[in-house]
Length: 415
Image (cartoon, rainbow, N blue to C red; front, side, top):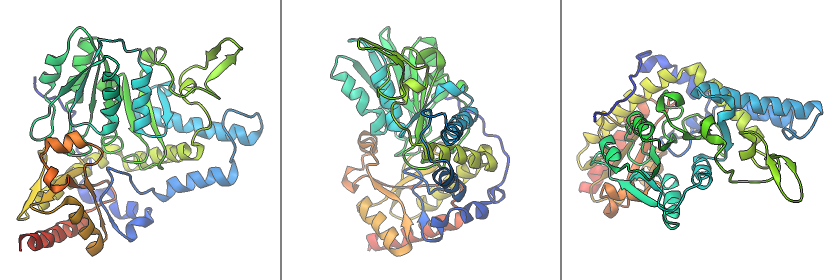
């Protein structure tokens, strides 16, 4: 089976994305070279201002009061849900607010009625958040089938198809590996899940806000999203896309206030989806900020961001790969937003620390909450990898400084 990837529409050149204007709205970039978007992104001022507006002008709880301030808070909160739904091409009630991608995945892992003997198919290159919940279910009699990626960190959809059997309950995969940057064949895997009547979960932690993602095209039943990475929203926000047809059969993870419409001493009645999954007071300011972040992404244009980041990623890979003693991972034609690399005979943490101390360059180092994936790359002796990751606020000048500094470190290591 050949990989089927969505075609990228050519819209703007790298220079046309108005990078300088975006950078002007992120003050943190005046102090550092920030290359850690895969962990979290700095928050643009329009997003911060939307949250301040809530705190200054209508700081009340949602869905709890009839007074005007509470009504305004509820309206703004639900407006954010509507913006997100439109952005991913879903219905509004298919968007469930969470703290992060991890919580979104755990809602699925704990909410599906798995039976002993059911099987789950998962790649070996997943972030721990899309691996540990399934390992936990293995302890309870679930058959976990782990698909190994190739040397570039890419899953072959044909291997997934071979692993499917009559007991396959769920197929899950990351869209873009957080440790390698490799893009997985999520559309082919969606076809396989549909053909075999299996549920399908995609971890979009590294693709949301970086590239076009139409939930309907993926054929996924569930997609887990972060707010604080590619979408440029605040930390403590995320959401789960849950297809309407399957949401009624998913058990909520967090029961309590706001999840029920009626309670007796014997039983309770759930609120409609998504309220039944959003127990307790939510991160109201955060989700209003996330709505503003979606507006911000829309103004730039997700097509523009995708093309810009694709070119910037390839440029970064090429600059680092040409350095003596450097090791780059992944296929440069199939990575997005992330370049994982090492310098021969140097611990990844030492490289990251020198980059920070010498040039204020912020990169991640180590195992990136993906120990099986990093071990798949055979980098244990180097303490994992150095990971540089970009977004639309980065530019070629920053990549040049990174490459020049890595080159100097490489000379020091070699000497």
